[in-house]
Image (cartoon, rainbow, N blue to C red; front, side, top):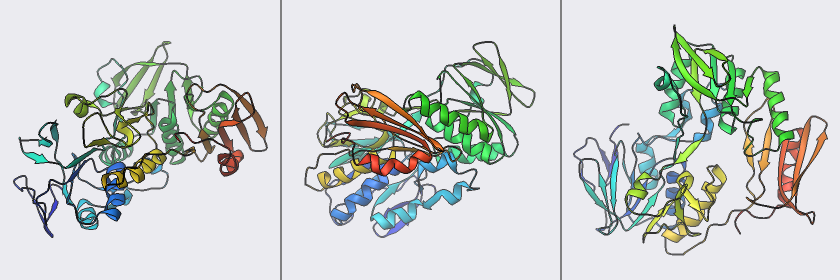
Length: 407
């Protein structure tokens, strides 16, 4: 619902509405972003503080939905509307919040403790949380159809993608990582023909050891996915009603639609322009505090002690720690073992990568219907695992032996 926000027990529409904060005039908690990170934090915080005014600002329409569902909704026949659990009106009522939809944040005035919104409106904050997520990385491509390459990183993206799919049969997916593999499985299960292109030697190579990655590849191949691994797409040209994807080895692939799934980049521009410390993500400490007083970052945009983990479990752990911190009880975030489940029914996979720079070796065992890989330190301690097929059933048992990601 465009432009809707909750104001003192009711709703008003239109760009001229001004924020009213309710019972007090203390600048509110402001959360920028209404994705999973923003809404999860708001729910957790409201359990601890039901009085302080809450303002949420979002550039989209504020619909609540689970973004991980976007990559496997097609085979289930789920429309964009079916993925929405609540619109902005309902979320504002549930959270006793003002939600400013379709509202861009132009700048953070750190000394003045204000957000500058599009059009010059200034909104004060007592505490500010940046839950601004990440955006798709656009691969360096040439050709007259580069702007026609789609990415799916939001409900609006999914709606456009789903509409385009009604007119196509053959797709090329750029990127054999986690999201590319999930989309490939979902698309072939729903009846489309799919070829996946990427420089990786096997699917999801940044997370999976070779034996597990190859098992995933075999499962998806059996389901109908074709692969061009160890290759890069260099250009996308229009070709009649469709496209021609040129690979770096000279091969040309015909496609009705090209989907880019080559990864995400944390959205750091707003923070960087305000003088906050950034690296890959917005740099925060264990309390999710940025380098500026009373400004925090959460979710895909945040980098916690060098870790930028764009997955659901780190987001949930962060929200559960940040809520009490904002409510007056400083609470450091703790990351327990957090395996990632790859949604590829043709070959289920679960992986808990070893810590970055960990010393050890992968021990791989084939079992009936799957592969078990364990990353063991020199003294035999389990530091990580990757499971494919039937071995995924061992995930819970192995988790008990893993050290925390961030203690």
